[in-house]
Length: 222
Image (cartoon, helix red, strand yellow):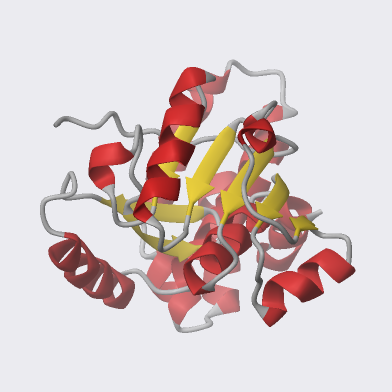
């Protein structure tokens, strides 16, 4: 099996999770973090799911799954401990051409989830194509040590710089040497050690006056 790597935009898209246990809860949280419209179907649900439903973050249907629950869904997760039900979920999803993942059953999925390292906007995905999830997790732990939270700050900084530069009347390609110069500098080390004055000096050397570290971060977050 060869999988096609892709990052999905699920903002405001309808997603279904069948199963309200710990696995289903993890799926729900990851979907909510990406601003999906989430429906959970399960006779029982964790306290976390009940809280999310009470707050209006998700829709929780406390009953057994029905094929009609699949209608209009973009993405579907089967997270139950019932093999027959999981296979039915997969079959219903295939019939409607939905993206479907059944937890721990790659043979009845049309996509699988990678192990991931997340630092805000930085997302590193690791996959062994289902051959060794344990090795993927080991690689994730190694990458978590290598890529700290300074990389998230760096990306926010670059987002602010990009926003300002794109307002100039230049072709985007003209900015590439500037971006490369920043990336190849020691700015990530400076961010990690909290040397704001040195960061501002570096930005001024490369970009000129008017580029301040804190202001650029605020611009990206705004």
